[in-house]
Length: 154
Image 1 (cartoon, rainbow, N blue to C red):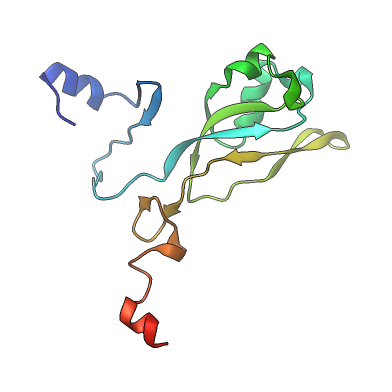
Image 2 (cartoon, rainbow, N blue to C red):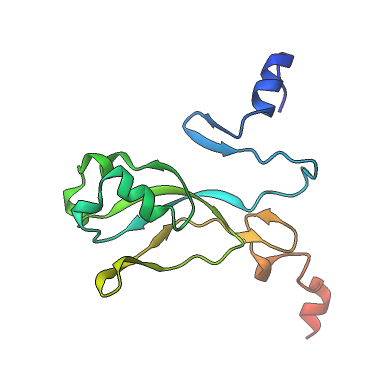
């Protein structure tokens, strides 16, 4: 990034997150920051299909989605209850670590008085834990695959 003034640089450097043209950016500055590697922390939309309407309260949604990751924002139609044909499909943007396992359901309620809530992760970006870059996973990492001439001979 290039800044026009030192004040702009300091303002961005000291922020934890920033929204630019409706896109959310997370900054994880540390003494060990290395621009060659990308962070495995990413914002991700999750859907909670068939969630009972009484859980559409922002406090309840934050509590439920907070089990998955840090809640960043709620989907507008979810809060406004303006998506009637989606069978009460709540959507929440959470911050997750792409290297950690993601549960496909969570328990809502106490002991026998509850239900399993399915979680759908929308457009999960691929992340390679070998080279620490987004866009591919370990199975397609060019650093882990044998060279092309060796693959063709086998």
